[in-house]
Amino acid sequence: MSNINIVNVDFADVESTQMSFSESNRLRKRAHQIIPGGCHTYAKGDDQYPENSPGFICRGEGCHVMDVDGNEFIEYGMGLRSVTLGHGNKRVANAAHEAALQGINFLRPSPLELQLAEEMLSLLPHGDMIKFGKNGSDVTSAAIKLARAYTGRDKVAVPSNQPFFSVDDWFIGTTPMDAGIPDQVRNLSVHFTYNDIESVQSLFDRYPGEIACLIMEPAKYEDPEDSFLHKTKEICHNNGALFILDEIITGFRWHLNGAQQYYDIEADLSTFGKAMGNGFPISALIGKEEYMKAGGIHHDEERVFLLSQTYGAETGSLAAAIETINIYREENVVDYLWDIGRQLKGGLSDIISDLGLEGYFTLSGHPCCMVYGTNNRNCRPSQRFRTLFLQETIKQGLLMPSLIVSYAHTEEDIAFTLRGIRKALSVYRKALEEGVHQYLAGPSVKPVFRKFS
Image (cartoon, rainbow, N blue to C red; front, top):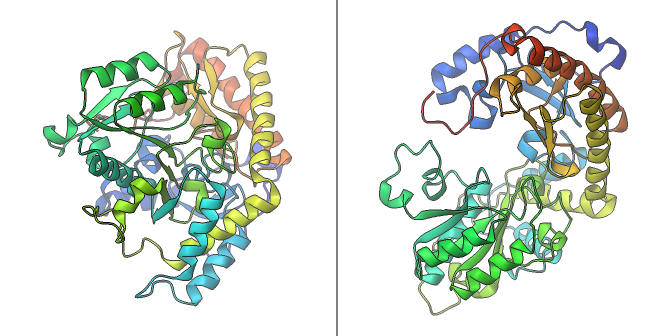
């Protein structure tokens, strides 16, 4: 398998490709015997994909990936939005490799920690201090802990219409998968609605003096309306709570300096990750000194165990993040993400119109970070139609759980993609007319957050 070379798909021949998933199916069976869920990220699980689909990816170059059966796909999702520059970026990989050859984990800090810290803070001037973690959950949970320590309060305000913030109890307790989380913990997280400022105000009115902080993404699939971010920050500060923005996704996509620059807002604490290291495991908590210093050793107040991990700052990921930022600075990556995303969105909008699928297949989000919605004949969200679209795009050489583009997607990739989507949506149109059960080859995909299997 290590001798396989990724090459560009021959666009003319893709229709005749007959895909086999025999090796994936063999590995799936064994994986579910020894790994709960068959993998280590729920969003990558078998219940998120059709029956006939690649179960294991073994190689990637740019936006092209190859599964263990030798099938090649153009990927839209890019490692759950983390691989923004493309798979196997040589500059990033070489930087991590060279750093690792010098030693990956020492008894004392590496100077790379300071170098990356200075790079990040130069990009994000709304923060004074920074701590690194390995994934988004590390830093969002650290932000919650810091806010609780600073305010002496326990409750956390979370938007009900944004899907994910952490694997830790303070957030998972708000989802249907809340087994194993005590009621006392679950009840400490309270909800408001993004873009509904009255819901924010009523939450603070309902719990006066109890809310430590409010956390949300600056935007998900819709922009903040009527100064929602600024008004929310004002309500937080008027009520003695910290205002936290989670930029795990928006950072390095909306703007090189973060969505806070894009929307002209500053958070008390903010979190970054995903595209920060082009898929390498690294994340960051950034904040004002008056809050962050509690995690340090040069103050007279009670200390906060903020972030302390054996692998919290291993040199490979630090070097990868530094090189990723260098590439962003040199090559105007963010503008490209928007531009190539507009090409995809424009072409797909034309296809939807041509096939009369308005209201049945929908697009949401900015061009640099789009998702689609699949609706049934009654224009209601449908997992069965999502399964059908995934099934049919896989047949066309597309791995497309979302419409996330990368710096590696070319105009040729987009053209090929649009041809494949047109064929997939033609089947989708027939399924609306004749019944989706006529076209599905297996069971429907399921939401990640659900009570039972």
